[in-house]
Amino acid sequence: MIKQISTIALVAIAAIAFTGCSGEKKATEVKTYKYSTTEVYEKSCSKCHGLNGEGNVEKKTPALNDRTAGEMAQDLFDVKNGGTNQSSGTDHEIMEHNMQKLVDKGFDYDINSMAEYMSKLSKK
Ligand code: HEC
Image 1 (tube, rainbow, N blue to C red):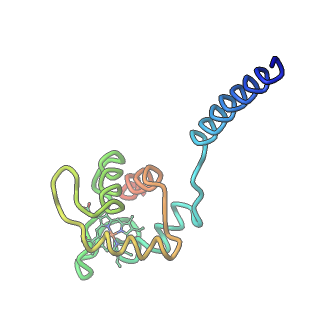
Image 2: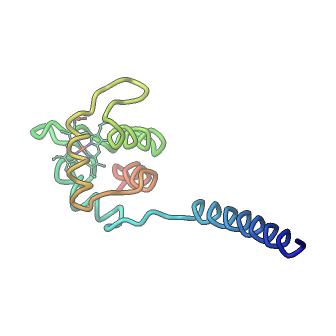
């Protein structure tokens, strides 16, 4: 009987310890990307948006170097999540479609890192 109780206690402790551990692991888990933010920008985004994010009239691409990192992060989030600007309701259907193709090619990126990179483009 005592042995049985201690077994249950052990299982309970193990379960708690395990949950705590996996929770901790999740928080520190970092998504890894095939290319660095700079590589993604220079190998893909720049082809349509320009090396300095100045935009391209012929390709009908908007400039991406005209806003703060915070604003850019919001816009990047939008094109990665359904294509509609959460605040203004602007549609980014084309870019959403492009983004899916780019992700398939390995050109995925961390939103905050890309936003930071783009916010510095015009000052290069
Ligand atoms: C094949 C050309 C092409 C490539 C490559 C491309 N874009 Fe775009 N992008 C467009 C076009 C066209 C638009 C405008 C239409 C739209 O918003 O859907 C646009 C719009 C955007 C917008 C929304 C514009 C705004 O003012 O908020 C963001 C953000 C964006 N692109 C980011 C990127 C990033 C980041 C990359 C690289 C990973 C990239 N684009 C690569 C063509 C491209």
